[in-house]
Amino acid sequence: MLNIEKTTNASELTVSLTGRLDTTTAPELEKELKASLDSVTTLVIDMTALDYISSAGLRVLLSAQKTMNKQGEMKVVHVNETIMEIFEVTGFSDILTIE
Amino acid sequence: MFERCITRSELLRCALCKDAPCTAACGTLDPARILRSLWFDDEKNAAASFPDNNPCAVCAAPCEEACVRAHQVPIRHLLTRVHDEVKPQLEIGVPEDEDRLRTELCGVPLENPFLLSSSVVASTYDMCARAFEAGWAGAAFKTICSFPIHEASPRFSAITGDNGSIIGFKNIEQLSDHSVAENMEIFRRLKENYPNKFILASIMGQNDAEWEELSCLCEENGADAVELNFSCPNMADDGLGSDIGQVPELVERFASAARRGTKLPILAKLTPNVAAMSPAAEAARRGGADGIAAINTIKSIIGVNPHTYVSSPAVHGRSAVGGYSGNAVKPIALRFIAELAQNRALQGMHLSAMGGVETWADALEFILLGAGSIQVTTAVMQYGYRIIGDLKQGLNYYLAEKGFAHVGEAVGLALDSVSDSTDVLERDTVVFPKFHRERCIGCGRCAISCADGGHQAVRLTDDRKPVLDGRKCVGCHLCVLVCPQKAITASRKRIKREHNA
Image (cartoon, rainbow over all chains, first blue to last red; front, side):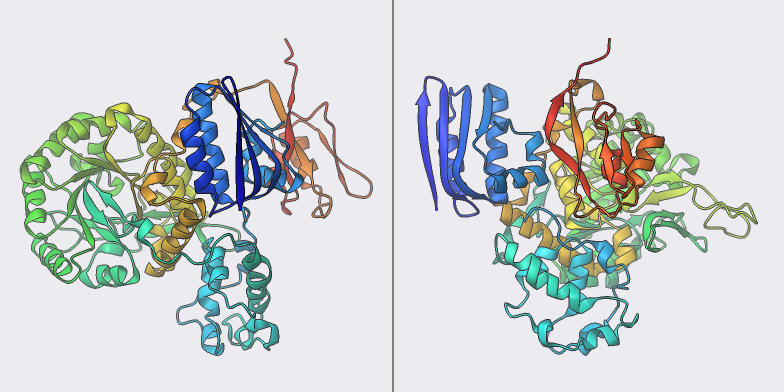
């Protein structure tokens, strides 16, 4: 299960994720982001309550990052230790702005 | 699961046998097949299809006794790790089908992206038929020409890795030694018996008329596309082979000639023995080619004998420069594919990539850099047609795991981060290495390499532990690469570095 909560503040969009971003739920996030990134210049992904991220989840994050590279910036915030380790072994820590 | 659990280095004593005795001795599993998956970077499929209850847990391991190197391969231990370590971490099971591997080559359907490349591995009806049965989507048949071919003996040489297996391969072989008529008969039979397999007819003419005539004949006899061999380094005399690929005017001229002979898709197979491949590729497009196949082999010399002074392969006291291939050439091939894929003048052309592909992960690298199909020879010569199993399974599993619906969605995804020049890279931060004490055995290889090939930033303490001097470390990561224990990785953070004026 993945809960996706969106908060918009002018051109800043915060997406808070709760649960698991896996093979089943990654397409949901992909769809959400596709529908809501127009005119967003700052995308914040809040991972405070995200327990797990899979390969498919990483792919969605990467494609969001590539979109935001063209139109502004993306930040990933409140990353827990398990997910941080995944970002490290996959090289994502070199690509994402993690705060 | 993001890191490989079991590495090839853990089963180096496995000989990857034909009709393996380990499997014959086991009544329950197919250990040889599982070991092969581990060898070819496909542990996830091995784990996904492994039984839930580990049969090895209560077994005396007759497989290890039966092994051609009795008791030298820890089969039971490796299979148990597949069950205990890999399986619990899997994100998905074995995908239901391989439909996501379906793709196309210039509009012609391909069952999967994997073709045999033009060489001895695709040189007879029987060989192609066996490859098709094994799962290859098609074959670039060994280059057809209308002049006689007599090969030298021996005709191969290799450089090997630390365990003795081939990593770089040299051949001095030329073209098909069948007559054009014999080869056309093979095409007709293959197409009749394997209508869904892709036949890429590789040809080489000696003049405009021959290029036109051969391409026409290939179409009449059932080929799906024609590959123009502008690149064989062993046919470079008298303006053939790689001598053509080095001259864009000739590439355009002979591509036009072949174009006159056929309406089939045409791929120009180009040589890496150039500074840049784009001039020849653009010329091929002007001549009417629909795609590029690359890379052919790299001109090379292997193994100068210290006693006879003759390099290898030695043929009656002489040797010759020959074509280099195998896993060792992959970085060079990847660079050429990226060059072609990034060239706007070539947009829309199919790229059929080859050069050192052994595993699905090698193939994926080419796909991410823009390849629409993948060709393989050297790994087939070394391991057999059977490698198609793990190539297909492994790529299919990756695509399913990542959520790709079709392999085509992955084509070119790596291109935006590749720069031709290092000038564009950010140079204001440093990533230090991180030492993992639990894995470190205190050998000090990091300290040696840093002292003599780096910046004297790693010191070995009296109790044999590496210590980093952050003032000296420039973050080059030589230590990460030399560590035999893989106990050094990149640290988490980039640190701002002041530049000295």
